Length: 139
Image 1: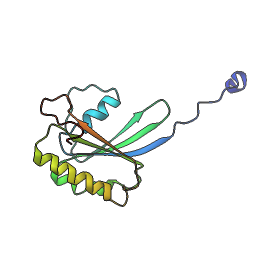
Image 2: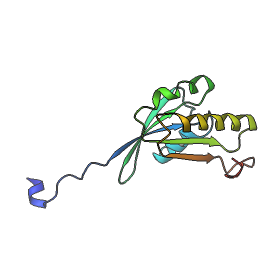
Image 3: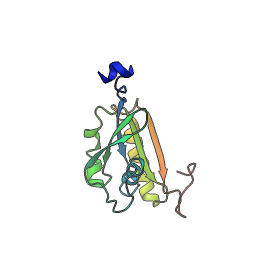
Image 4: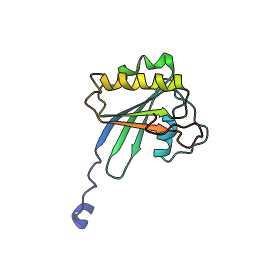
């Protein structure tokens, strides 16, 4: 009845996209998603295993699977790739050379994975505000 009077129906559903967010522990994946969801930055704890967040935008919803970055969890990342439509790779630009090399190896592995190699990648060089941060060119 209301729709007939106002000549308006419900708003069309927003398209949903499934993304996977990966990176080493401490790179800032959880902080990034909390910020995008307008959640408080206080009491952020590193993700153990994985978590899923729906990140709403005006014209779409991003369903982001955030995968923990600990060494013992990274070997299971590929089990969560199926159905992904894009990848967010977060790295700590102020990390040690060893951690940066590990991040490079994980990124190259993800770029070559059959379920991800054709998908769009967003590579975020996080922690640019820290004194030890490398430039995007150095990373």
